[in-house]
Amino acid sequence: MGNKWLKYGIALVAGIPVALCLSMVCCGTSSLPADILEDDWRWMYACGIFSLAAFTLLIFLFPARIKECLPAVVSWVFILYGVVEAVWGIRQVYGFTYSNHSLYALTGSFYNPGPYSGYLAMIFPICLYEWLKRKEDKKTISYYIVLFGMLLILCVLPAGMSRSAWIAASVSSVYICSMHYRMEIQHYIRHHRKQAVSFAIVTFILGGIALGGIYQMKKDSADGRLFLWKIAVRAVNEHPWTGCGWNSVPAAYGQAQENYFAAGNYTATEELVAGAPEYVFNEYLQVAIAWGIPVLCIGLLILSGSMYIGHKQGIYGLCGALLSLAVFAFSSYPLQFPAFVSALIILVLACGIRVLPLEKVWPRILFTVLLLIGSYGCFCKYQQKSKTVEACKQWTKSRMFYHSGAYQQAVESYAEIQKEMRENARFMFEYGHALHKLHEPELSNKVLKEALKVSGDPMILNIIGKNEQEMKHYESAEYWFMRAVHRLPGRIYPYYLLANLYADPSFYRRDKLERMVQTVLEKEPKIQSTAIKQMRRKARELLKKVPEN
Image (cartoon, rainbow, N blue to C red; front, top):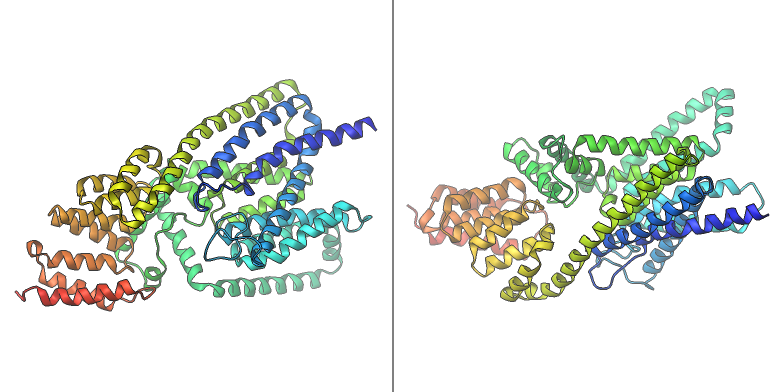
């Protein structure tokens, strides 16, 4: 009896650092907008300090007990947070709780439905596995808890309209069911081989039809995703071994897209679906662009190794969660959120810990030292993020000057926090644009060229070109406008800016002006707007104002 209570006591104590480590999924801050995650990252590092320190103590004192109970503890903490998130989403659907995005009714604690659905899809296989384990036995409280959590997630997941999450949940559920019923499946295949083959063929056909339906549901979005990956592969080829850094991925992608369109060998569909994304919607390509192919291979080795170990140890629920996250990461951007990063770390640890020889003194000491180093690293990152959070708070207050046109006050405030915010693309653009509005072209270009290191937005190229034109550097202005055209040839604005440049008496080019005006008038935009109508009206006036010769 004493050993039993000790086992439950250690499991309960181990649940505290696990719950703390995963708590950023429900963490929020009223001081920053929902789309600025700096405070969430700071919270993750703060939790990492204490969680890793607690794990160090627990593993050093009770290595065998922790190895035995950690997978179950992690599973139940995930189920708890899954229930919280699902209830959160249902309350949003019925209007009892506000959404974090003005365009979507359902976001949970996230900024939009995509990551929210992906998080629920990651937890669903854990609930499914725990339910299947208990459904044949005597019904206990734990049975009804996992059933309740599973049904809640099933209610919310379809409403998120995330195809990536649906596929991830489906793939992981197939894995869970195949592991739970593996004996029955093997017996059926041995005794009904023809029926099994027929069933596999029908399933394959139905799966293809389902994937085709999912593709047709948002065809333009799917085509855009495929084009993203095509350009991302080209970006990987630029720095295949070292990468360009995590914050510079949008810039590397933008440059690769610019080079692709500048070559001229592209289709009308590619021009239509191209954009200036902050992420490449494939975390494997994102990691390869950021840190190089070797780091990607190491990450894949750790991920697949953890899943293999967990599978061999029979930890199918957590393996299903890892599989779901791996599938979701193929067509989304979960690693941009601290909730997913912490979940990935906990899942890898819980799946792999049982094969670590922690009962032996030296391996245990080595592992605890590694945890302490990780805790110290979290402390250093926490201090760094604290400065960034304070800068973000000042930025959110100062943005009202920028948006109201009080650019002088905005520039004065922005200058104070530029050092901490130089890796924030939106801040750098606003700072450079405000300087442009104040007719300080040289300083504006200096800031905007820094912004180009972390952003692929063609508007930065447009503003740099306008600054060059203001300084009467006409050939340089033409160069920057043409770069904006090549980066996103579907946008009308850079053609309009080129038309204005060629209409300038000091750089008058009648033939080029006519071509640009014709392009502005004839190019079909993605979405019609008042701004496009105004550009077209002004473009017609340009031809009337300038001389024929």
